[in-house]
Image: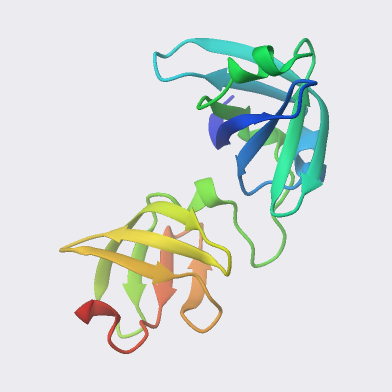
Length: 167
């Protein structure tokens, strides 16, 4: 069994115990997993069973068994949500979960290594890869830029937009 980071629990939503999930799994994917491990910054853990997950604009709202109030939900805020990797549904052809991208080597189409993905930031328009190499680069994760993601080889191939390295 290998645990993978699914996302971070945000603030409570409403008064009945729902919380916001900051991550990239859909409500359907979360229902498929159902059982999670929550961890706070001090390393404390708690097993959580999903009751409901529902989309709300660009987020997913979660309700866990045994969490019935805003106060109980606030105890989960800023915690990380982990799941067994074997329980995750396949992301689909040509797709990857954010956690799968962390640590992958980033290569320019010409063969130059740019560094490794340290973080994936979600913006309103598209994700941005934070790549740490000789210097930090913020690379937009768009179809024009990201040419190939090879999870097996651990490599993301990109074509950098003109001027990106000059920023």
